[in-house]
Length: 48
Length: 249
Image (cartoon, rainbow over all chains, first blue to last red):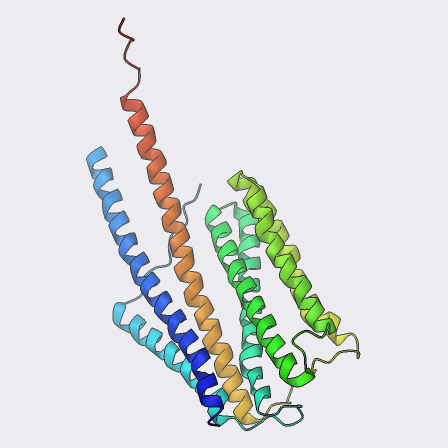
């Protein structure tokens, strides 16, 4: 079992990296979506 | 053109809890696979045969991603909405990623059980063919410039590729006794500990797929909106500078 412990760290680190990447990307996308919607709304109001 | 809308955002707190629960599930199945499961009986290397709890979930997630890609390819052919094309392409890319992971974990499994990473077993040959079929989808997309034509051809090819997946990974290897790959592992061949860890891994990887799918579709949709906006602004600029000023002599 002690031999398997260091081996286990590899998939664990991969999971944490993938999870962190998705979390950051998800937050960034939502922020950009909000900014873009606000800008488009402002442009539409200016056009009117 | 119908504009693809990003998936509706969930409530912040609930979503954060879901994300943390997913990480815990992934870590628990990994720790369970390495530390809790007993060595697998009936294998040449019982200790390392536990990789089955990583190998099988990868193929399950690949099947799910292929199914979703096919669904949106059919939707594109029915409605001609480029948003469906984006979803089909994103899911197809994730399916390819999971097929590659299935092949890699299978190669490690083969090394510890059969002594070599690649044995030209019928299942290994079939998954190599399948991976090449999936790679060709992206070559096809890269070869067509017109977005509508590209989406239609890709959707038709996606149906062919998705139909070949169960044939190459299930029907063909099970039609011959001449294979090293174990058969019927999931049909009552697993102990309760293995079942729990394996299905936990399947759930975790499928949730990772769903999350990655949603995020990448949102990225692609944002890019499409920005592209449309830039085109609109270019039109406005060209309209304001028209007609051009007469040349001064």
